[in-house]
Image (cartoon, rainbow, N blue to C red; front, side, top):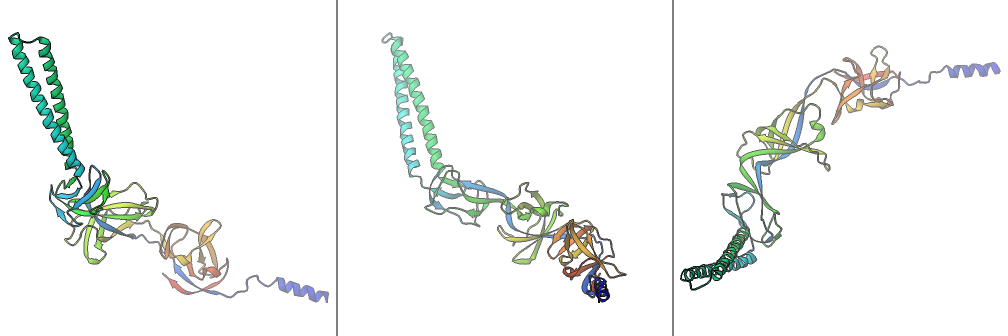
Amino acid sequence: MLLMRATCITLFLAVPAYADGPLAVAAVVAQTRAENRIEVMVGEIVARETLSMSFPTGGRIATVDFEVGDKVASGAVLARIQSVQQEQALRGAQAGVATAQADYRQAAEDLDRQENLLERGATTRISRDTAEDALRIAQGRLSQAEADLNRANQAVEDTVLLAASDATVTARAIEVGQVVGAAQTVLELALGDRLDALFDVPEIMLTGDIPSSLVSMSLLDDDTVGFSGTVRRVSPLVDARTGTVKLTVGIDDPPDTVTYGAAVRGTAQRPELPGVTLPYTAMTATADGPAVWIIDPETRQVALQGVTIARYETGRVTVSDGIDDGTLIVTQGAQLLYPGRVVTIVEATP
């Protein structure tokens, strides 16, 4: 009896730990390729040169003479603020100048009369000098009144917003009756006809090898309208909220249908270093990092192989190191594998 028990225990221990049959998996043959990666961006058409318009003084908007999209000529009135107080101050300054001028003329006549009397000995030098001092005081008051008048005139002029040059209104931030502050932007003007495309691109897109400076573009609502541009400026700052960087592309020869504010799609090519591209289902991990299951072509047994990931993309990854060309890599069924398990390949993609 004891001998029979020992024999059963020995037979039990001799059974392999893995008694599973071959597992059907899909596999791919590793092949190193170097290809140009296409980067796609979505942005907006903007004016290359813009001007923010504001009133030097605050007040209530009286009139707005242009809408977004209107073209304006140099010197055209864009908007006005109510100017009742400024006009009252102007009239007061004008009256002050008139009074100062009359005082000055009177002081000049008094000095002239005192000089004539002094020549005939009919007055004293003190009286003549007093008249000269009065003239100097009147002259100073006149100069002050004229300065006040100039300020009053400028204050009235500041209630009218004029176009600095020929331009197009691209944004309007005011309505009649609205109260605005001094230097508050009320209108945006586009100067000239040159256009840019402004893109907010992920920071990662501008690391490593920067995409080609030549960008092909098309309108989102009409992809038959195609044009191109060259990268003019890359912002040195990353938007902390979105994690994007502003990329400005100068449009070389925009079609007539391309207007301010139009949504645009841009594509650029990025040269990539050679690597093995795999579907994301091929990836697994070990304590040391990313890995894949490789298949021995003779025994059909699998083993883990550590790899270095060059980049992640939608639905796939690119491996830069750890895999030789021709290696069989499991792409489906990896979650059921363990080292040494025998597999059968149901699909092998070159």
